[in-house]
Length: 172
Image 1 (tube, rainbow, N blue to C red):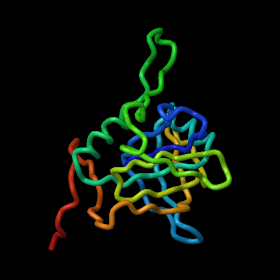
Image 2: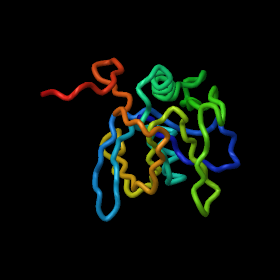
Image 3: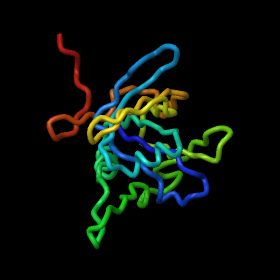
Image 4: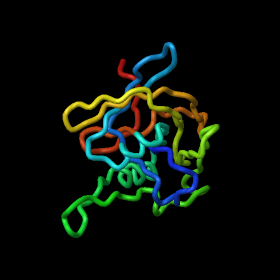
């Protein structure tokens, strides 16, 4: 799954933040649906999430395009030339609006969330809570909307044992 963070609609799209999540868990259904995931720190995406409070979780289609996207969004920040800090990666830099992604506007704000076109489903969430645990943050997001880009549910792109997979048949 890929997470994309909300940003000001005034920023250039190449500065959009996002990352590949290793796991997302359903946390609650009542009083409203919530999901949970964790991020390793330091993280430029975490900074954007704290600042903007809204994000999208993309369930990717099980295809080569999704594998390329997952790899692109899994690249962490790189140490800068002077070795004094980190330079954020720009996963949206080589993606074109309306071809690879669209934007979802958060009503009543100047925030937009990039929505990847190659997603089966997209959960639009807002920050509910964050817990710091060691060098990670555990995020809890309230699901405010669900976008359905494809009526066919495949189970999405799976990653296990260093390989990508598609959901298989039921074990009898």
